[in-house]
Image 1 (cartoon, rainbow, N blue to C red):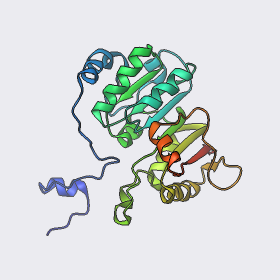
Image 2: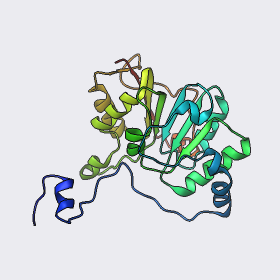
Image 3: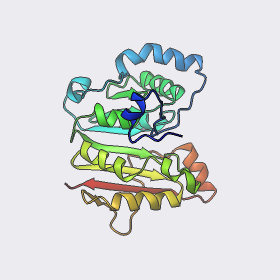
Image 4: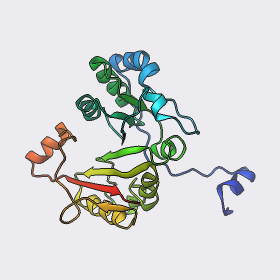
Length: 239
């Protein structure tokens, strides 16, 4: 098989090479409610992807701290956080369309004006759309841990990704990760501790107690009853 040194070289030869993404696309059937929510609320709360930076103050019509959550699932926790912190603006990024619809439906029922959602690859959004040093916090809660060792390279938490996030956080901004898989928590800590631009906010060790602003999910509650642990890691950008 012929080898190519770069994507451009392969394309020039007419050969397609698949790219590794930060997620696995999970298609699902929309309920009527989710479909209706997308139709009704996407024009006001949805953000279409583009490959140029956006103005967050223009997007929300004000100057306020901006929190981004990657992979919000069905959006229950994200909506709860936005409702509890009207002084902050929130952007949720999710590739699961039913989850986007569910989130919009819940946010619409509450009449939230400080929440926007995107249906796109988070890495591309971070690289191309979000301005440098524009975020007060980035949240990554319970990402796929890819348990098998041969799949660890698919984990979203890698050195390059953590560095990309750092450039989007304002000085003093926070990267907040949480997982219910201890080996992944250890991996998260190892990667983030290796970046000199962050300081771990834990007074001891690598982990912090769950902060009040992060709601406990039903999944998390069930896990706790079974004796499963959850690990929160919060890093502050220092440089």
